[in-house]
Image (cartoon, rainbow, N blue to C red):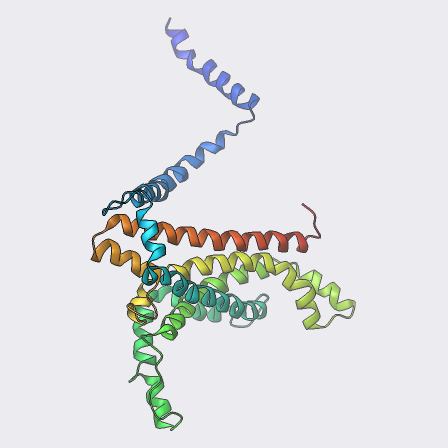
Length: 303
């Protein structure tokens, strides 16, 4: 009896392994469980909770009352275009600016580590410290205006903060390091022998970049643009600190914050958050569709 008990579990384990093998189930998939649990607890559950909360308006009027109120209120509806007017240009500038810098640093460059460190310093500063630096540097009494006034370049201080320009500059400063690092990783993965082969056939530097590097890099730039846009679209501290949160830079995240924590209307705050997610998904979906076309073009339509 004891021998059967001691050796009993082993055949069951062997049988289980055989069943998994017959069904082509990789046992290493169990390693995904912690990641799945992490996503469910920290993303899926809050998202579903906020989604169902958005259909429970405090003022009544039906499940879609909050959504109707948002899209029929010009003050709330305008926040979509204000946020897109900041997020899209900022993401585009970050991606376009990262391409030449990453292209020049893709190989062995003297001082590459030091230059890379300098370029990614804004990541360590954070949004709040960057905004404070902009206030001190580009404010009416900041260094930039004082220097320009002393040199008699301008007669009155430039208005670079507490408006659209201030938020845009903050988004570029904080978003460029992410775009640069992503673009550098993509461009470093392109086989340099392709450019060398084109050079032997007489192609100049611009031709090689336009005909070889750029088509291969374009799908990666689509991913970079998507991540940069999501980062810029969710702007909040910059819009508050160096923008005009009640006027020209009243972005959709500020509207969500005001609804939830100023008016204590949590269903409305959840509704605006859901609308934010919907808009980001639409933009990401459009960019990903464009990327699939670029990828097919870069691979000659194979796959």
